[in-house]
Each structure stands twice: as C-alpha cells, then as structure tokens.
Length: 386
Ligand code: PMP
Image 1 (cartoon, helix red, strand yellow):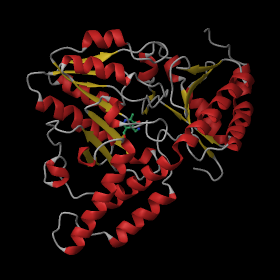
Image 2 (cartoon, protein in one colour; image 1 turned 60 degrees about the vertical axis):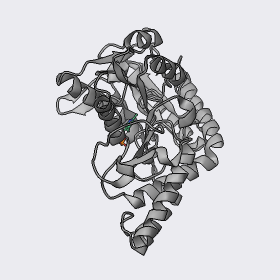
Image 3 (tube, protein in one colour; image 1 turned 45 degrees about the horizontal axis):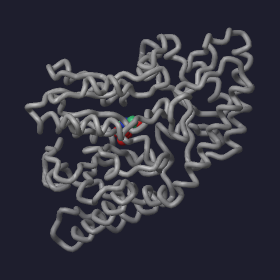
Image 4 (cartoon, helix red, strand yellow; image 1 turned 120 degrees about the vertical axis):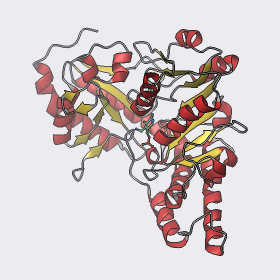
C-alpha cells in the first residue's frame, strides 16, 4: 500500500491492532511450549490457551466449551458443512444462500458434483434473503442450512432469527458464517439461534490464519482434522500466538464497539451522500436493505469496477471489488448477479469498507479523490437507468 493512502478495504482484512501484536509477541516469547505437553512450560501454555478461549467466547456470547479454534473462517465453514453431512446421514440435503462466501459456494459445488443435493436460497434486488423460498427449500431431509450473518460485498444483513426458526421447525442445523459481523454489529451466539457459527480473527484486528467455529453445546459435530486437541474437534498443535492475538483483538473491539459502530455508520453515510451529490449515475447497491454500518457497494454509472479501482488507487484511495479477477479478465460478482443485476452491471460494484481507524479526513479525501478521478469519466458516460 502506498504511504498515506486511505485504506477502505476493511472487509477484506484489517491491520493488526497494537493489543493483538503485543500479546502475540509475548506469547511467542513466553508461552512457546506445546499446550498439550504435561510439563510445566506446556501447562503454562495451556493456561494461556484457556484464558484466550474464555475471552474470545465471552466476546461472541458463547461458552468457552463451545469454541473450536481453527485456521480461519474458511476451515470453520468446511467443518460445519462437511461435519453436518457426516453426522446426519439420513438427511443428505444442504441449503445455503446464493450469496455465501465464494469458498463456501465452491465447497457446495464440489459436494453437488459428488451427488449431494444442494439448494440455493435466492435474494431480492436489494440483496435481502427470500424467506418464502427458504421456507419452501428447508425440509425434513435438510442436514444443514448455511446463511451468512452479513454479506461481505454489500454489507446486507441476513434475517438470522427468522432462518433459525425455519431451520428449527424442520430439525435442520443452522450454520451462520458470521465472519463479517464482529466489530461491525452486536453478536451473541447464544441468542442467535444458530447451531454453528464461523468467525475469523483478521477481520477485527487479529492476525490472519486463525478463527473459530462455535459449536452449540451437545451438537455431535465430527472433526475435519482428526486429533486430540480442541476436545477431539480439531487436531493439530494450536496456533497459540494467533489465538492470543485473536483474544486481544476481541477485547479491544468489545471495549469500543458501541462508539465504533456509530462513527462508522456516520462516516459511511457521509461517503454515500457525498458521492451521490458530486457524481452523476452513482448507485448504492443494497441501499434498501438493512446493512452493516461500515460497508458500501457502489456502482459509478457504467464504469467497470476495475477501472474505478485503478483510478481511485492512483488518487490515493484503496477500495475493492467483489468481482473476481482471473486470467481471462474480470468475472461478474456472484452476489450482484444473485441480486438480479445483468453481467455488465455485476462487474461495476465497488466496495468501500470502513474500519475503526477510518477518520472524517479519510472520507473527505476519498470524496475529493473520487471527484477528481471519476467525474471526467462519468461526464462522458450516460447514467444507468434506475
Ligand atoms: N466468510 C466470509 C463472509 C468472509 O468475508 C471471509 C473472508 N473474506 C471468509 C469467510 C474467509 O475467512 P478466512 O480468511 O478467515 O478464511
């Protein structure tokens, strides 16, 4: 990242916070032993692990015994899906939203190709989950329903309580990929109605490569990686520095959550209003839905996301696009396609995601950069029909 650039890609990842960094260094220096060892250094590392588990669980509204540390949300998602299918052989069906994270959708696609029936719950033009379709798709043969807490591209929040009710009524387990919620919305596993929940440390100021799967008490979920650690639910020597950093990041996030949410929402709204006022053809995608306080997915007339992102970065602002880049060019965003946008429009979504360190000056600089970099281009294109 160029020095002094405004970073508005916090949904992709966040800088490691000072608290996490300090605790990771301390753990690497002083608690380097294997927490499974029975000697004194091992037992000392074990206490660090137990302490971190208690703090992360408290932040997420879960019991410490419900928390399985993983290498991140991708692994947690895999354990939830594969574990549910393995544990419930008489219910072979998988139901997930059409806008889940690409890693989860790719897993579902792989399972479908191998013979598992998979149904996708559609969303409407604002990105809201179609609850009628969910009602029709979740049946007595559904092993698992998987719906994300909020979408990483649009920030649109999913109606978790209603989905939990539908799943419970049919005896299906509910897994929530909550990766985008911590630090951006209140989150309580116990109150969510979910049986399983995935989270990731690097979205809230913790390090990459660590996360957790919350498994509600008594749920007979098999491991993805066999071994004795994590009460036989996740084998492999624990990433103790990462886990300690995760705990510190949770604590840091909890301390300022209320104020952070308010500030991010105000700045995000200011950004959207400013862009809409200054530039022709600006559309906020999913604006009619309940959204995370920090996320804004915007199309700029008929400009492709790639071009907008290049221009913005040259002007000192870093944003992102949900559209995946491959060797053959930019693929349209599966989220925007699911919202009913056509292929060209699904290549135009530019995501601005704010974080706890984003300032009013950053937003002012973004508005000035967008005006300078994009208005000459927009002046030459026609605004999109509504
Ligand atoms: N799910 C969602 C909704 C995400 O946004 C991400 C991160 N982009 C992941 C899963 C994957 O998380 P991790 O990097 O911890 O594997």
